Length: 251
Image 1 (cartoon, rainbow, N blue to C red):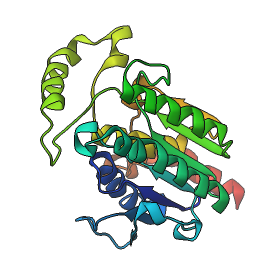
Image 2: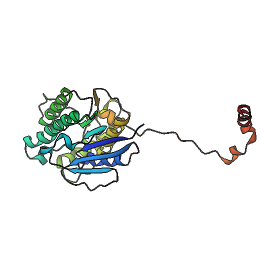
Image 3: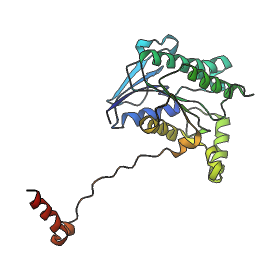
Image 4: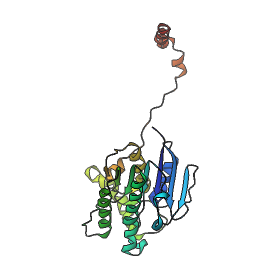
């Protein structure tokens, strides 16, 4: 497999940080570029950092790359208004997707949410539903949408509602088996790994939807390595006799 290049937007967010580290430490990626509003703490030889105001983002700010990962997301509490929330979770991702298409970036990966529906009575789900629908309407070469359930893990800022939900899901997760497994909460690290995993091994259809169960089921690809020959086998001439006979015949 040829070495790939990637762009990550939302690289300093909870899931984005895990994804950037995963990409930089992967042998499959030769270079990783991030577009962010603040300098990340993480550094790597493969990593190129661009500090940009998303309101002034232009096509030239995007490197030519194989994959663009959009990990932007906030909460209404942090955004303070519905308008600000919509800007981060809807307007910016759509703008970036449009620029990626113009730039010729073939694969776009974005985080949405389980239960997304533009007709939902819940504003959060409405916005996510609109995001998915409008991204699909952009008719990109290949669009992959990830729909996780509750994302758990230690965040920098304290979110009371998420902490309560996280505690509840930690109790319920072992109970969520069989058909209920698809409702399990997942760690941000697993979501990041799933994005990386499906970028390498997933389908490259026009639209790819990865539900919560797909994110949970993403696992490292096992590689088989040649095992060293033991000393006993090495000097067991009876077992190796056929090998030498075949070699003599070839000569």
